[in-house]
Amino acid sequence: MNGQETGGIQRHLSRPGNALRKYQQTVIGVDSWLALVKYEFIECCVTPVPGCLGRFLRSVFYPFLLASCSYTAKIGRNLTLQQPAKISLAARVVIEDLVTLNVKGQGKGIVLKEDVHVGTKTILSCPGGFIVIGAGTVIGPQCRLGSLKGLIVGHSCHIGERTYLIGAAHAFDRLDLPIILQPQTCRGETIIGDQVKIGRGVTILDGVRIGSRAHIADGSLVLKDVPDDVSVQGVPAVQVSSGV
Image 1 (cartoon, rainbow, N blue to C red):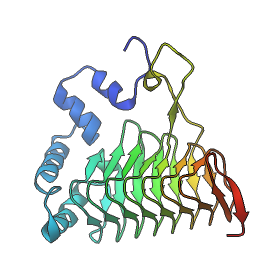
Image 2 (spheres, helix red, strand yellow):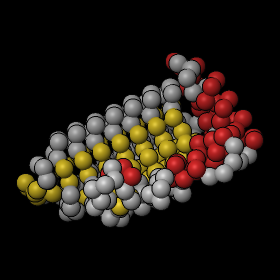
Image 3 (cartoon, one colour):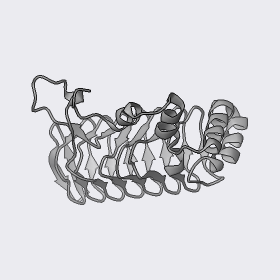
Image 4 (cartoon, rainbow, N blue to C red):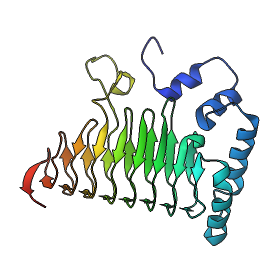
């Protein structure tokens, strides 16, 4: 791309080799034929099956595909996976329909601990670092959680629908290039403490740390760290109370 920096998927696709090998490296994460057959069988014959039968089949077959998957995990229809051998689901995890769990390039993995609930159409995207979601955390529908250097969400948190935890951004110094083609930037890990309540439609930028028991009001844009036991709101978010 004329010397421009590209993303992880583009780098894989631009390497020498045939289309099947690139597919294995990018989507499955390994070149193994056995891994390819397992992935394709489960994606075609198990992932889309509706109802109780589908949930039962996924509880049987997904442990053969993922790094680890408790038999008590409940997985909805049409789960999209990338590099599934780097994804772990603990006991009683609930994943609703049309969720995406993507580990891209050099991403280290996604871990959902006990009793995590992920709402429909939510995307967890991990091109770098880990995504770790603590026990008992509920993620609403249509959220997007990203990680370039790491995302850790504590236990017993609530994340409202259509919330974005930004894992990275793009530089915008050059006026002759679209922003999407400019180098990625990241200020560091995003850390969400325990028992945090994040409202609907919230955006939290990369590198921000949210203290335990904090409350982020609906529609807020969080640009900087939030201490423990504090409520913030607004665009940009500012403190409105403490001792919540």
